[in-house]
Every structure is written in structure tokens, then in C-alpha cells.
Amino acid sequence: MFPDRHQPIKQSWERSRELGVERHRAVNDILKGGELKDRQDNLREFFQATDDILEHLFLQFKQSEFMVIVSDSDSYIVSAWGEPPFSERAKNVWLDTGANWDESVKGTNAIGTAIFEKKPISVVGDEHFCKENHFLSCYAAPIYSPTGELLCILDVSGDARSHHPHTLGMVVAAAQACEARLTLQQTKNELTLALNENNLLLNEHHQPLLSVNQDGVITRLNRQAAKMLGQSIQECIGKPLSNWFQEETDEILSSNGYSSRVVSLKSVENDKQTKWMVHAVLDNRKRLYHGMVKPIPRRKSKNEIDSHFVSECEKMKKALNIAQAIAPTKATVLIQGETGSGKDWVARTIHNSGGRNGPFLVVNCGALPENLIESELFGYEKGAFTGAHKEGKKGKFEAADQGTLFLDEIGELPLASQTVLLRVLEEKHVTRIGGHRPRPVDVRIVAATNRDLPVEIQKGTFRSDLYYRLCEFEIRIPPLREREDIPQMIDFFLEEMANELEADYLYLDDLGMKKLTMYHWPGNVRELKQVVRQACYNAFILRKSRVISASDIDHPQMNMKQGFLLENQEEKTIREVLEKTNCNISESSRLLGISRTTLYRKISQYESLKNLKKEMKRKEKKK
Image 1 (cartoon, rainbow, N blue to C red):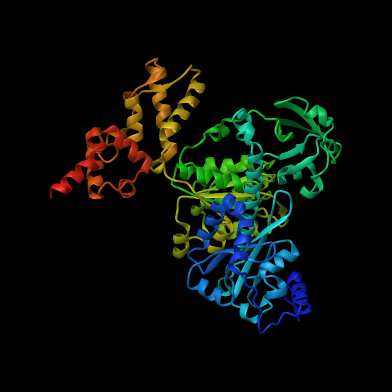
Image 2 (cartoon, rainbow, N blue to C red; image 1 turned 120 degrees about the vertical axis):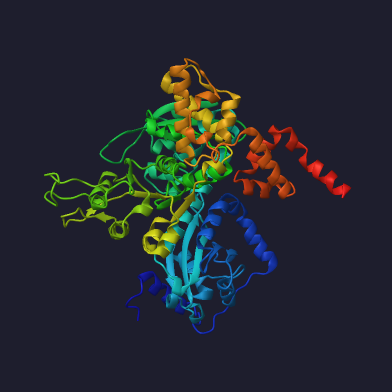
């Protein structure tokens, strides 16, 4: 009866019949007000920790007939986000807050079946046991707590006519991001007592983390630590550190307060020892050791220096939080942003935080000639074409095995190459040009573009299925003109240049800082960095000065009328906009194309603007 059904669906149908579920007349189990609130309260910390991840997932489906649902471990829906008309149709079958979607109530469905199977699953159309649910396509993935217990189910449901196989991958990626966030959140809470005392612990949240009691027995750990130890979370909890490390537990955690020592991991593979560094913190109130285990740090390359910059811009912080949360997952990521806004930096952050052992390779899809793109990406066999190397050549996919491949300017990729790329992403095998042997590759894909890909899809220049495959997670990078942290970024670039030029320090005077912060930066971070570098050369090399002045900033665009406003022009422009909006800061900042923080800072610079609101009120009273 199920020739085309997947085995889990078939088995779920059999269970549904055994449970006595009626296909033609579904029975509903709806929570009362107090019961629903209790179940929602049980997941309050989950929602607080993952709110931005769930919001991002919802926004990805907002314009389509889909809704995002979270159920608890008993299949009761505790939260649902959706918009008409689909949300109204969903309510007709009680796909809504308070309803129980266990298999014993609703038969085969994504939520109940995912709970039973303990793994992600999609249930589309007539795969649902109850006929009234045949209009649905549902995709669900379980979310586990840091201690390995089933916490809840994340589900995306929509019209069966809108079914797309990549949707389940997006749900799985979001679920994995939620799990990573929960682990890091709990670990961060455990380390709170140490944060003000030792900055070494501040930026290590994506390394393997574990906690042990005073006897050296593991009380909790994250998935990275479990992977490092070679067992599941449940198998590790309750076991002593000595099961995995050659050193005795007392030796590892020998010092009070803070300790840092190298330890050797007992290897199960070829008797190979792996060296790790352990930082341990003693909480005198709870008598718990919180161990942070990380690889011995290596010297960073110049390409990794930018990762040390901590952005003060809220939009950028949000983008980086998403990047770091999804880094441990295998989800593909699409980074959207203007040219020069730092998409490559975010891509490298994902790679560095993800724990992959292979290299980080970059391919600029817009810079390669069309006839060379496929050979560059997928490689070629000897004699594949005129001018080919005699021995053939591996492509970027093979070279990036076990690492990350950053496909910059993906919107420039020709349609023919898009088709081949999609096949490689789906099959995880690459076949060189002129060859016939598929070669397995394990590559994390991060793509970036400054184009609006949905618009390109409508134009027919970009494949929709490739877009969905690349966009399991989307990160938007704000342009520099919308960021509030330009002064901090300038100081960071000055530190870089001081190190490069072997100067004790380099300092930008107030007029120079004002000149840089007033410019609109069409070239974004890349342009700013280049301007700062040139100014440092002008001051330190030509003038032999460590103090950089406005005259050292030699940028022709800043002297053009449309590029750089003199102070009286800026003051006049801001005043006109404030008067137009009746001093509404949000509306004014939008019209000026700057952030609220930047506008407040500029208002404080000019005496005539500080009391503008009072002046306008006095004028209004006189009328």
C-alpha cells in the first residue's frame, strides 16, 4: 500500500491504526488556559535564548504560506507564528497554540512522528494519516537540551502545493542553531562568576565546553566536547575526566582560582595523542569546577586579524551572533550585503568558530571568466581541454575538503554553472571535467552576494532551487553608513597599522575623526580601511608623525559636494530634517540615512540643535 512511502511514514501509519486514530474524523485535544500557560512557562528560558533565531526563521517564510511552530516534548503546540490566509486554514484543523499533535491524537504528522522517531522528518500532503490534514506540508526537527533530553519540536508547516525538499534542511539548521545557543547560554551562565576576573574566557564559547564537580565527574558538556571525547552527551555525563585524559583529575584541576595547563587526550584512533589546553575556574560557593577545554592556540595569520574586532553596532552584533550560533552546524549560509561591507570577514568568522579542520578557501564567482568557472570549482582530468595541466587539477571543492568554501559574488554565477553547483551540493560528490569518477567531498558552503537574489530569480538569471539550497540561513550585513561603531573601527585599523609600521601608537585627531565619521562610505569597510591605511602612511612615513590629521586623509571623493558635507552644511541639513519631522529622532535618522545613535551624537555637536525642540514648542505656543 506504500510503494513510494518512506519507511518512517509507513511505520507511523501502522502505529496510527493500532492507536485507533480515525482517518475521516479527527479528535482534538486542546489545552485549557492555565494548562497552556504552564507548558509555555516550562519553555520560557528556551524562547528567551533563541528568540532571534526563531524570528529569523519566521522572516524567511513570512512572504509565503508557511508558519513556524514550537511544540513541547508531549506534542502540545506552545507557540505558533503565521499570517493569513494560511494561518486561518491551519486553525480549522487545530494547527494552532494549545493543540496536541501526538500520533495518538492526529496520526502521522511531522510533530508527533518526529517525537517518536527522535529525528527530523517531513510529512507532505496525503502522507498525513488524517484526511483533513492532506492540504499540509510539514517539516519538523527535535531540539535537545544541553543534557541530551528532548526539549521541544521546531516545525514549519505550509500548503502542500508549496512543498520544497530544502525546507526540512532549513528547519534542521535552525534547530541546531537553537541547541548551540542553549549550550552556550548555559555555559555562559555557569562561567558568569569568572567573566569579570579573567578575560581569557570571554571569547571561547564556541570551543568544547564542559563542567565537572569537585570530584572531577562531568556534570554537563556541549556537543563539541562530546564529539571531542568521542561519545554522546548522555554517555559522558557522570563519568570522570580520567576516562579521557591521561593526566589525573587532581592534576588537571590542581590550582585554586584559575589554572591553565596542557593535557593529553587518550586517543582511540591509532593511539594518537591529542594535546589540549584546559582553563579551570573554581566557584567557592557551589564548589564546582567549570572546565573550558580548547586546542592549544596557534599563531594567527594576517587574514584572521579582523576576527578580533568586537563590533559595537547592534545590527552587526546580531549578524555575528547568528554567524557564531550556526557555525557548529553544517547549514549552508547566504550572506547579503553591499560590496566592501565585510561579508568575507563574517564568512571567515563562521569557519573559525565552526571547528572544521580543513582550509578556508575563497572563490570570487564574478572575477572568473565564464569558460573557466567550472574547472576552477570542480577541477579537471588530464587532457580535458587544450591548455590543461598534464596531470589534471583538483578544483576548489576538493581542495576545501573538511573545510569551508566561500563563494563570493554568487549572484554572478552563470546559469549553466549553477546547475552543476546544485548537483554537487545535493550529492556531496564532485566529478572533474573530462572525468567519470565521483569524488566525495565534505565542504561547508558559505555564499555571499550584493544582489537581490529573489529579484534575480524573477528575472530568470538565478535558479530558485539553488537559492533555497544556499539559503538555509541568511545573514544580512549592514552598510557602513548605518553603523554606529565607525570610531571604534577606525581605532582598530590604527592599531593594526601601528603594529605593521612598528610604531608605539598612531592617533587620529578630532578633526580627522570628524571628517571620517561624516563621510557616507559607498565602499563600506573596505574603503574605510584603505583610507585609514593611506592616512597612516602620509603621517608616519612622509611627515614622521604619530598624530594623523585631517590633511593626511587624502580622499578625492570627500571633497566632492555629494560626498562630504562641510560642518555648516551638515548642521543645516540636520536642522531642516528635524524641523520637518517635529524632532522625531527615528523618522529623522531614517530620512538622513544614519543611525539614531549617530544622529544623537551629531545633535550634541551643535549648540543650535541641542535646544531645537524647545524652540519649536515656544513657536507653536505663540501661534
